[in-house]
Image (tube, rainbow, N blue to C red; front, side, top):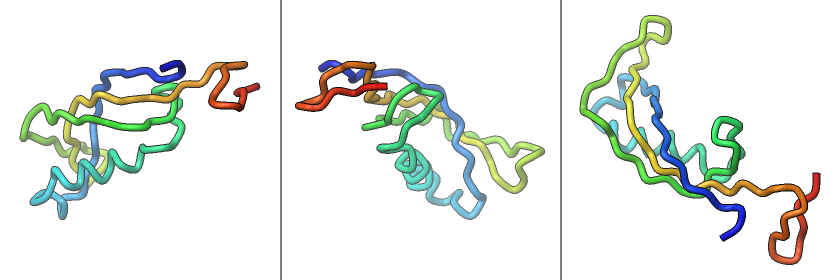
Length: 94
């Protein structure tokens, strides 16, 4: 479908230590905050994600106490309209 693209992203999600027991849920919550918002990093609107947590290790970063960073990879489905692209009966114009 025109305007959709899939990409692989290497991400670091920062979590509060109180979320350590349920880190998977906290990671999904953080990723959910990306849905249906435009991301300049990914150059599109995030429509869906499929996370793959690389390891069960996390690292506390010196400047962001007390948060810890969890590395993960995610497949993202992005909506990336181009100028003059027809979307349904509407045209995206800049």
